Each structure stands twice: as C-alpha cells, then as structure tokens.
Length: 446
Image (cartoon, rainbow, N blue to C red; front, side):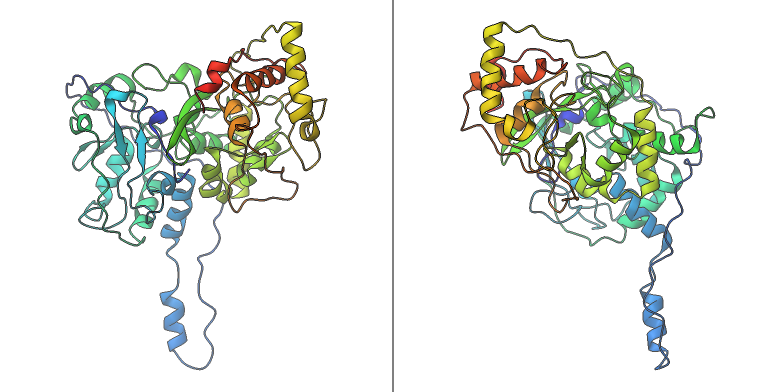
C-alpha cells in the first residue's frame, strides 16, 4: 500500500492528558524457529586469472544477518509505510489521515541511515527500544508505527532488521511536519499505560512448531491486527475481537480516501474464512489469488511488497495459525421484500451474471465466487461497495496462473440506488448473510 496509508491503524488519541508510567521490560525469548535460509549470495567462483576475482567475490558476499534482516523487513512491510508516493524507499513522508478531524495528519518518518533526517544516529539499542516499547531517542512514538505488535519480535530479529536498514541508501529528506497536536507526545504515556503491554512472543507448548511460528509472524512483524482487529474510541485494538475484521480508511483513488473493511480472518462461516483451507490461505498470501478471491485495494501493496516474498514454510505457518482462529459471530442475514429482491436480481443479471454466474459461484479464470465470499458478507460492506464503484485491480507484478480477470468499475454505470440494490441481492442470496446497504451508504464512498 505505497501510495496510501491512513490512521485506520488506530493509534493515537489519548492526547489530552498525560502522566509518566514506567513500562516493565520483558525478558526476550527466542523466536519460533524460522525455516533454514539460503546460503549467502556470493559472486561466481574466481578463475585462475588472478587474485582480483577473489577480492571481488569477497566484496560481494552478503552478510547473512543483513540478508535475513532484509527478509524480515519485507515481512514487516516497512517500505510501504515509510515510502511516500513517488518518493525514495524508506525516506518517509507518507501521510496518515486520522479518523478524527481535529487530529489532522501524521507523516511517516525517514528510516534511512541519513544522519540528519533519518535514523543514522540511532544506535542498535535505540532501534530495539523503539520497536519494543514505542520510545525513540526523541520521545514517545505514535502507534501508526505498530510497536504494539513489534514488541513481540525477538531481539535477534530486530537486530537483523537494524543491520539491513543500515545498508540501504541514505536519503536526506525531511518529511512534512505533523499536525500541531502531534507535537504534544505526553498523551502517549497514558495511552500506553492503558492499552500497551510490552513483551516478546511466548510459544504455546500445546501447539506445533509450525503453529507457533505462524502466531509469531501474524501477531508480531506481520502486525495483521493493525488492520484486521476492531478498535475502541481511543483507537486501541480490542483484544477480545482479535482479527474479527475492521474498518480501515485508505486510498480509493489518488487524493481520495474512503473506508475499507479489512476482512474477518477467523473461522466465521458468514463473513470469515471458514470455507478457506490452509492451502487457500497460503496461496493467497504468496500470490494474492486463490479459488475464493483475489487481492485488491489496500491489500495489493501488502501482498506485493511483503507477503509474496514469504518463504513457503513461513506462508504455511501463517496459514496454519490463521486457520486455527476461533470464529467471530456470523454476519446476520437481512430481509428483502420481493420487490427489492427482484430489482437486485435484475441488476445482477445485467451487470454481474456474465462473470460471477447465476449461481454466484464465479466463472473459470473470469471472476471469483460471490456465493460464500467473505468480502460480500463482511460485517461492514465498505469493501464490497468500493469494489463495485471502483473495480478490482490486482497488485502490479502479480499475475499468477489462473488469476481472475480485472473487474471494471461501475461508478459511472449504476446509480447509488442501483449499487445498493445489487449489493443487497448478493449479500442475501446463496445462503449469504449481511446487513442491508442503503443508497446513502454508497454515496459516502463516491
């Protein structure tokens, strides 16, 4: 998601008062075992023509810690949040639009090793402290930087990321200034005291090594809960609704932000991933596509910049953990009148049936099923509305065999009333369930 990011990560508010609290430090535990990494990349073996080739080979040897740190930084998707649209990698400046107008906008920081505008003067200890406690050399960080998840990452993995970031090209770039209210960081002390628990991931002895590895990645560097877990009024995640799906404001098209619904990742039948096998999840993480759907919207850059680079072992581990998540409550079915159902069905037959089929099961290499779709049945219909209005384009560079065709936009083909009618038909047919959508709901997304 490199041209968009907003404060749907929920992070900041408690800016109204503050008192200093001392966060207890937790002892670091080793991360659940990662798959064996490839041997360090080296230059071709030297020929007999001279020792210069040997020197070249040695110079091109990749430091295993740096190589591992690059992989972990990809898994954490650092580049998406810390790269402005059209900007240099990791140089910051990406705007985070807050859900509360009075808070304004927050901009991501420059994490290149530039000494004046980046983190070039940060020590390894500074970096570890920021990742684990949300405290940087200049004070408290806002959880737009998801230290609430990164606190679970081991010292060893954080050190590897630090080593990698020291090797990226330094960029002298000062991000735009944050809104005025963000100058007062003392409010984060009380927010952290209320909602943040520092500590590394602790393996569950009752689960397999694969499951523990998946839990460590999903809940740590992957910080999936930042988007997929609902938040309270102070924008802290609700632990009792872990990965139940949540509204995330994000970019629909250049300069225009709209809410999306980050899908329910649990085993919920209506609106979750109960129908997905572990292999379906693994394939989606690696390719952005499976038999149930394809990536679009905010997930595009998550797949392209991060998850598509997972090793097969890590993708399987994340899938195993996600597949084990207990179900959230099902989406509740709506009641349509016969007239409403007939109007929606007529619009579906006109605009959707050719690709998604009258059965809702989709068409081979054309369109995914809408029957049983987690997007179609989302507790909040935001993503369904957006995909009808603006279409669904996959992430650039990802076009796996059998991928679905790109869905065209219907914002100029249907009125708000018609889009609401066809969406309600989809959400109430083929045993689907979901709340009713109004024309006013659609209008908010235009």
